[in-house]
Length: 281
Image (cartoon, rainbow, N blue to C red; front, side, top):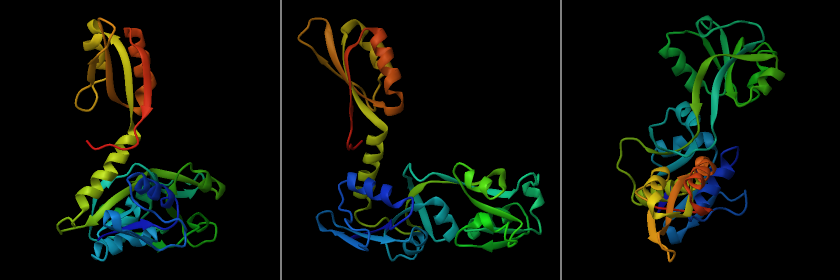
């Protein structure tokens, strides 16, 4: 069976399970479940701490993992990022007391607290900056106030948490992260990986696109298809009404309303948009 690691808690857990459920796989019904066997699909899911997933996959204990890029890089495990999953986006920034005016070049010799020591050490090494990295498991933003560190490096979403702690970000993002699919580096793909990857990709595409149907006069088909080119090509079918055809095409979800407006102005009517629940491309 294909052995797959899934986050058991935290910001990635629910969305990762929803993705797998949409891909046709069984998921746990109780948050206390540690293992779910999906015999029909030849897959076994292990629910682990997100920070540990890359270690299990890199060590060869499990075949595939879903976790954050930041945690993968911080673990320094021997894994390969195979696919971006489009959720759990975050960025890692430096934070210093308000008005400090610090830059990355000022970090030499300073104490920097973070939950991502591996990522930070690699970042500083690449820039030839020597600083004292302090690993903390949480509540990093209080480290400066408590006198444990001079600067912090922490995940930032809105920046409000840092501001409440009397801190401000500085410099460019140390790392941009999101949920990713990983496999062990340097080995052949495990049996069943292609099917699993294809299913996941199908869900991600389905979430990104909608199916658009509309009727239009034959003389305007070429212009309409230029607006809705689809993935391969639109489907064009004759209608009983002479001189008219029906067109069906996949359209990026974020552009759907703008596309509908363009088609209407071109003379299209009966424009319908429906969700795509799954696909294979």
